[in-house]
Length: 286
Image 1 (cartoon, rainbow, N blue to C red):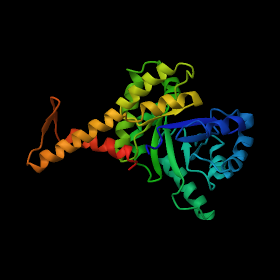
Image 2 (tube, rainbow, N blue to C red):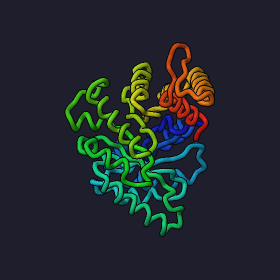
Image 3 (tube, helix red, strand yellow):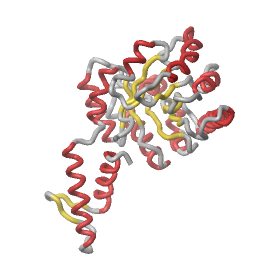
Image 4 (cartoon, one colour):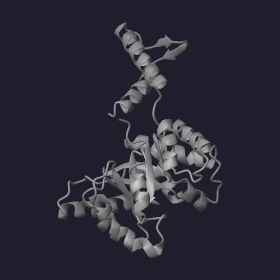
C-alpha cells in the first residue's frame, strides 16, 4: 500500500463532515483545530477530539493544532495526545526550536499517560518566509518529525505573492521543502491544499506539478478532491511495469560486468536504476 497520498482536512466541530471524511477514500484524516474553527468554537472543538477518536475508525487520524505562538497550542497538545491519534500537525513552523519544544511536551505526556514513547508522530507545515528560510534545520530537528507539509496560501499572504504562480515563487518554495526533506531523511512532503474545490482539472494539474518537484501526496479540503489526488500520486501500471523492466535489465547488465544498458533508446545507469527501485519500494509499501 502507498501511504498518505491524500490527507483530508475536516473541522473538528462538524460531526457530519467528520463521518464523511472517514469514508472519503483518503489515506488519512486531519481533524482541524486551527483555520477551520472559529475562535469562539476552539474550546468545544478541542474537547471533542477524544470522543471523535474513541470511535473505531478505518483511517489514521491526525490533528492540526493551533500554532505554537498562539494561546491555544499548549492546551491543544494536552487534549490530543491520547490513544487513537496517529499524529499532530503543527502549523506555521518557523524554527527547529519550535519542533523540539512541542516534541518535549509530547514526550512528557506520553510518559505520564503510559503511551508508547514517540508513538504519536509530528508533522510540520512550512507556510511563512521565516519557516521557509529555516526549513533545512526544521526538517532535521527531531526524530518524531516524520514529514513536512507545504502551506502555499499562508506563504502567499505572508510574502504578498500570487498564489496561482505555480511555476514561479511557489514552485521554488515547494522545491526547497522537498530538498530539505530528502536531505534530512524524512518522508517526501505533502503538497498544499487546493482551494478551488470545483476545479478538479486544475487540481490534477497542480498535483502533477507537485509530484514532479518531489512530492508524494497532497492535502485535500473536500472529499471530491481525494480521488484525483490519489490517482496522481499512485504510480500507474505502466510506470510500475517500466520500473521493473529497468531494474531487471540493469541487474542483468551488472552481472555481465556493465554499469549501463540501453532500453528503448534510453541509457540506464545507477541513478536511473535507483529511481526505479524507489518507485517499486513505494508501491510495495516499504
